[in-house]
Image 1 (cartoon, helix red, strand yellow):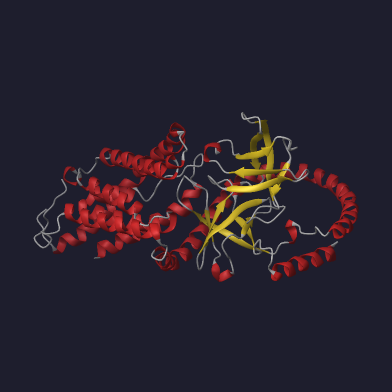
Image 2 (cartoon, one colour; image 1 turned 120 degrees about the vertical axis):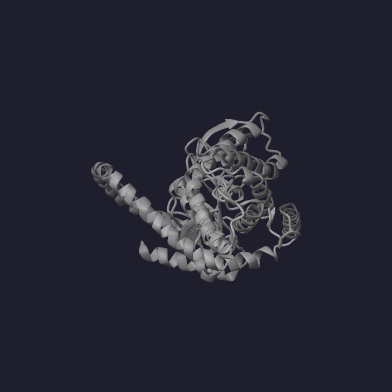
Length: 175
Length: 300
């Protein structure tokens, strides 16, 4: 329970970073996507169920304020959390590479879906421009953000775990 | 996965359930706003005050950074500006004289509605809508402060956009540079009509698109483009920007070009919301207009 509350707190924090800090750190009009890295990191660090939970909460918050379709981002984020959680068993302490790759792929897919829905279906056919000017820069920027935020989130995750572990028996171990 | 209690709910099943729930939400929100609006209202009660506070911190940091960097630049600029002031004062005297003539003429023609006479209220930008696809932003005033949808938003430089969504304590402004925003406009000097359309593929140049100029219209590079009288939502005579690269279209019937916005959207922090809606048969609107008129004549 405490873990869930803590995660919701982090989702709120990331949302606030997105809307306020996002404006300041924009490069060439492009800001990174803070929300999409939450299901990736929590799925990877804690497993599929956690990825689904965090993905759902983050997606709903995102949709409430930035999208006309409530549930669209939530659906994508949930799937991202699940896929990211599949790599949980291969989780190693210092492996940055897997979450980076997942982030890159999921950001690209998510933004490309938005492009299809909002632009391609309205006859804006210059796909190379949109991919090169908006989707790829956002992907790279988000991956860099994961690189910066991976360690703090990992430490927090371990901190939340250690409290639980004292009461319960430890069934999963970090090597 | 050795949890005995949650044996039934495997992650796969949870995914299916949650995904189905999301799909249901999508379908519901596609057809009706009744689900989204109360939810959004409830969440915004918690988030907007925090967001306002964080924004204050952010602006403080940015300002301090800028202050350090700019002191030398400012001194230089100050010297130049002092020279300019002297010039402008001279010019101002001339213009004041001209304005008196103009005022009397305007009264004769009863076209005294001017952008400066619209009632306005100030608002602070407290966040963006966090997608790279559009350029709308959030301001800290909502229906509690008397903001209504379709109200025009300006800055001291020119037209910013329009209120697109209103909530209790915040509203969302969609800008004229946002993709697929249409404003019907005209040349301030010649009165020729044209359309200003936001286009995300021009974001690198900082332009928006200027379209549907008639073949015989007289719009030249550098002309001020203002909102036109025939626009259904924008009040007349607000500066949008300046024409650039006006060229013949391939079809030989129209001309098109670029428009450089008058507003610096990158560094926008405060905006003004015009609390007068464009309605033609509303007696209240007329009264407000008259008030503005008397105020203006009192000043001059």
